Amino acid sequence: QPKNMPRLKGAPVVPSAMCFRDVIKALAAAGEAQKAVSVLDQMTKAGHTPDASTFAAAMRACAVRGRIDDTFSLLDRMRKAGVQPDFANAAALLLACDRRAEGVRAIEVLRSMPEMGLSPTTLTYNMVLSANAKAGRLETVQELLAEMEEAGGAKAPDIVTVNTLLDAYKRAHRYEDVLEILVNMETERGISPDVVSVNTAIKACKDEDRFDIALQLYEGMPSRGLEPDSVTYTETIAACGRAGSYDKAMEVLEAARASAVPLNTFVYNAAIGAAAACEQSEKALELIKEMRAGAGLSPDIVTFTTVMTMCTRKEEWEAVLFLAAEAEASGLALNKPLVNQVQRARAELLKQSGRKEASV
Image (cartoon, rainbow, N blue to C red; front, side):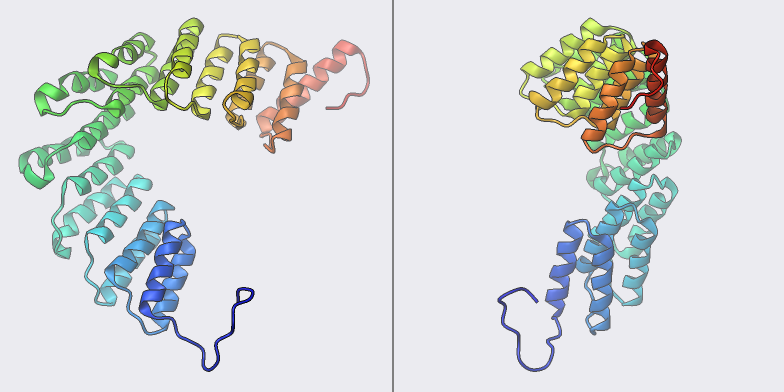
């Protein structure tokens, strides 16, 4: 009972179907999947039959949380209640499959859509492609793409389709195929690459230690009429770091600073990782300071793990203890490997100083 709100006289008021529906949709929008399903149960007990859109809201909330069994369970409840599923319900099922990389289950939903009175579209095919790409089912992705190309019309491939195909090849560690698709997608498919396309190719080259090609892709973006985003900078800097090209990594970071793209924790972590890989401990510490003072960002556990591991490798024990204290002051819990590094740093400092006791 909210404060200063008058109490209603008489019998308790049973919420209307519209009231239940609005509460369920609000909870779903807030990501409160369990509460949304709970209110849906209350709605049924109150004698109201949820409509397809109400079920879809609860299903999507479950899907976003990766609760795939709950999502499909709600579909069964719909059918038992005699409610006809619509496109939003099918999309929620496919989203759940995508989040859990359930490629086979996604195909089952796609094939059952006509039984629901629904016709698959490019959007639904793309969700099935994504689920299978994440599951590492490259051949299935290729087959579904061929099916889309043959059907055309409302099922014709679009830029999301091609980007998903690129991602499938990247996950299969076939960077050469990624590059071939990227180069030929406009002439063969009539679809121009976007930033996501190039970013996927850069990631594929980075993962296969082809720093040279990753850098070429980054530098060639202006000629394609594309502006790098935070993902571009993150992956390119990381590729430079893996190749031991510290100067080039800092050059890309400087370009990121000069751009209109807001720098996030991922960009800084990539730069700090590049500095650490190249044994540039002072620069790594400077970047942590820049994160806080210049960008207003809080270093995360990845930041501290990267720098502490480098300092341990270089036997810079004071820096290890300083960083550990900084991490704990930021409210971050040190994992076991970091705790081991702290203990080793304390032991080494005791040896060096000859003291019998030390504290952090």
